[in-house]
Length: 609
Image (tube, rainbow, N blue to C red; front, top):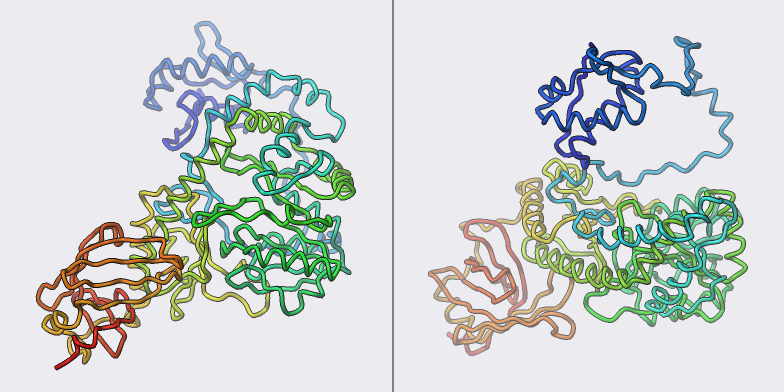
């Protein structure tokens, strides 16, 4: 009897019956259970695995129906002697030395550029705090709605067309839905012959770079920017200009006028999430027009603007056909979904279609029709609204948590939305060390290194995303990250010494604080003003338009300054020691580390002797 040593994985997405079938098939095809060998009885295997006999019996029935096993009267269950019929095997050559690697060095004519991008752990979902952008937790997928669209697609004529093969046309219903449902949201109008369906974002960028770029082409890319795009451009032989950013996105200075092609992510820039404002978009199109440049606009993640109105895409503002627009269906609609599209002048689309045919062919018409039905049934609008609400709430939760705990640093540039934040690590803590130590504690963040292409290198930032982590875990994840940063910095963290010369007593606080006004900037760069009223009331306003308001109470307990907001600071009470040097006020946890610093305006009469 063959020893059927198989093991069940409690984390497998398959049910018990499916796992048993899968393991037995692997054993049969891999040679562990050769044809004609005896398998355990259903009762014996059930006892071994700790499952019901009926579960094993059903798995055996399916394997028998597939011709892999057979039951012999009064003898037991055996691997079918015909289980491997039709499979090609080769037993010769075993033991021969493999072909030496150096023999291939002269055979490979064009090597792909080295990919040094950050590798997301395959088991990232097992980490309790995965702040990874672009990966999605299961709760975001509209599974039932996508399943309905898939079922309807399988009953449509598209099945016959897909089965017949041939042709390179896309599903006209999907093209129509993109033209009428998705593009108008971005201010874009396009004819059917100006749209090409691709196998995702990377496929779309590959087609455009192969068509528009060669060794004579100078291409401007954002710095920091998408490392995958840089690799594609390097493989095409382009000369790269690494163009820096500011608070409005790509800067239009320096050598940008020399670029033949300009690559931008204006909706929310990768990786900083900065949104290019309307004036900068208009200026960029003007620069491209004056210099005869083309623009590749990557809008694949679209614009999640949570603090204002979204801007139209560059393609929607373009009146000369200079902008090649790349976007697609959000990957969080279905696990493994890779459907993108290019919007460009018809001649470009014709050439891209020919190139697509040579490289990968068109994406599955069945998947295209499923997506078309998902759009036409209204599921896309509902899913987009739901995702915008959920991701907006998570993004706000991340900002609040960083503002509350992580006061040793700040985000690099102000953002109005997106699904990630670009955070500066303390100058005395290398971000690579922080990322590695955080991963060991179950906190996943991305280092900045892969996003910089210029020789000057990275700037000690890391990226935190919200697509992969439930909102209820965000606060604790940031709190633990803050604790880790303080642990790694050791004695370099500012702490309040007992002999601090600027420590303020409770008596001084009682005299100075009533009527005082405090000014500081939040972690994410917004101005904030706090009024300390004489009656113990506290009012705060944050944001460039005072859009974030809150009320609270302040009081004194001995030498401790106490405060509690209605919403800010999670509505929790803080008891803090205070130091004052000139106009600078600092708050410290009792006997502990620095919490925050600001400038304070004390009424002159409070300072009178």
